[in-house]
Amino acid sequence: MARIQIKQVRSIIDRPERQKRTMQALGLNKIGAVREVENTPAIAGMVAKVGHLIEVTEL
Image (cartoon, rainbow, N blue to C red):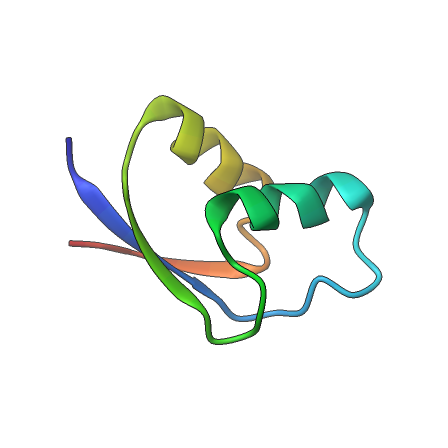
């Protein structure tokens, strides 16, 4: 599987609880936080739901 780098670029303050939990599941908790993960269908779905809060780079 391909790996992707996910970086949080916007705050989760005043976001719905579902989006906050998705960000937590991705391992992001602060602006500027970066995680490298496998691009599985589950991760791709989470990325799609919070795409307005993150920046994605393919590795």
